[in-house]
Length: 310
Ligand code: KMH
Ligand code: ZN
Image (cartoon, rainbow, N blue to C red; front, side, top):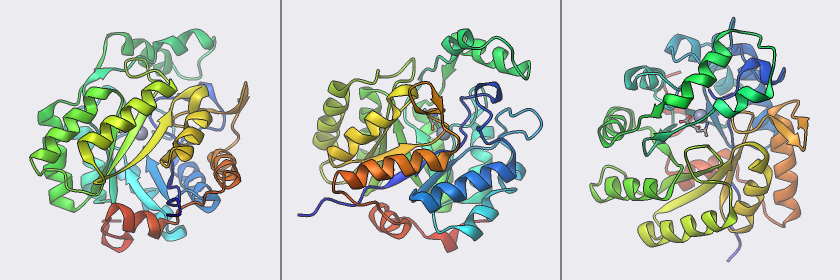
């Protein structure tokens, strides 16, 4: 059987990196839209989106801010739009969900476990900060729990999943998160085919080691059989090697400046499209193909770009 085309997700900005860290991190709605569109043109079939305050670059959960770029992206590309419910660390459950409820997107992220989420080691890498909120935000993560309880997850599955027909990128940062997801599959609150995003390299979750990837994949196969599609992202310098390993093992992958600001050792990526172009070249050099948005829609049983609220 021919290998399945690789679904490339691109996450252009996120809520983890801060403006001081790279001049290429998209901040304003115009920049986020332009980066998303270019990433889609380069081969990403899913765009995973966060919003930021255009003045300060701080993660901004407001639906109004998202609505400044979601329609622009939709009008210019056929890519699947995925609205994050992870938000920026420290936001409430309601804040994190508001934009997705307003947009009723084809996809949204859903983090399937509570955990530490330590960004504070990045404090040591920079001296002069553009905005005072940046070091305060990173320092805050030393004493922070990224809360995704069973009640939180159920709330999102019901409000957004059942309520809007949105399907999910289930973000799993640890082995236990697969079992949390399996619980919701058993409860029939998650129906196949579902999309598991395995996340490596966040301080508080699994380290970026190939053994963990293989073990997670085997465990997911046992728990879910052929009911799921899987994808891999690794934060920081492991981004490209883990994306490549996923493609080699038959999986899908995610890149983007949310997960890594770099294109190579010590070299900042000038754009999200540069990362997509690089991984696409690797995928194609491996003899694989890249999925179109409509192939991704069919495999993930998405409701379609015409059924969203923007
Ligand atoms: N920043 C990623 C490691 C979300 O948006 O829901 C996790 C993430 C969370 O993408
Ligand atoms: Zn995200």
